[in-house]
Image (cartoon, rainbow, N blue to C red; front, side, top):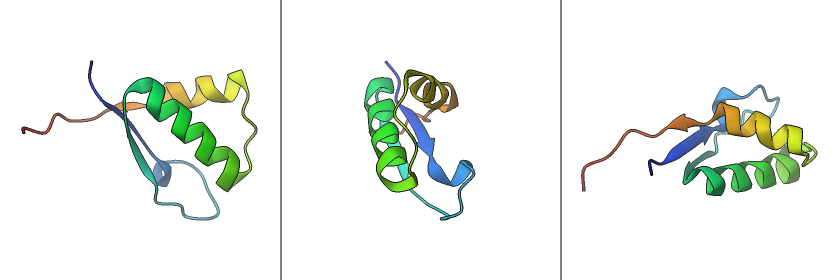
Amino acid sequence: MGRKFVDCREMPSESNCSLYISGTEEEVVRAAVEHAASVHGHEDTPEFREEIRKSLKDEAAVPA
């Protein structure tokens, strides 16, 4: 299973947040929703979680 990421810099924001979250799809969705709710005031709803899930991107594989 490949890693996913979400970069807060790619989201519309007045705070110019620079957080980058990567991991498994479920880890990233969970962390991104928690961050969006606690820092940016978004509501944790199934619709918002799906929006986050759709915005995830594949992280390029980095050789060990």
